[in-house]
Image (cartoon, rainbow, N blue to C red):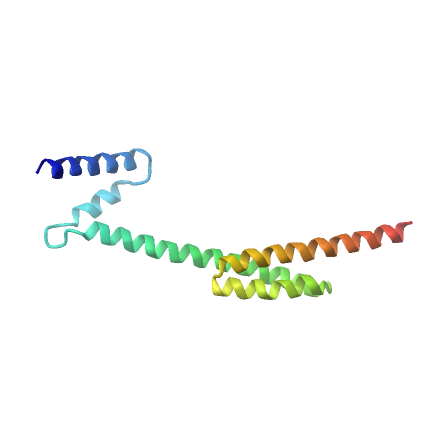
Length: 131
């Protein structure tokens, strides 16, 4: 019984620190009040659902925003004829759609590389024209 009291005190102290640090507010207290003997894991279940849902939403937001930017770069590079940048954006978009983080990172490096090469070539040709 003494272990249970110590465990409850640790949980209380930890929850109090979460309030103190601004991670939780009074809504969490209201959530705890909904828990009773018939559903002793209510708070844990609700919080777990929140984390699962929030992670999914954040992944979708990241993918959507990233995909939108890649789509924009793909379009603008196509409109000026930057073929290699445009072509590097195609697999990048596919990896975004698949939510393949490793593929996105590799593709991002490839797009940056192709962009740098194109920029160097265009600047070199402009400098040659100025001479």
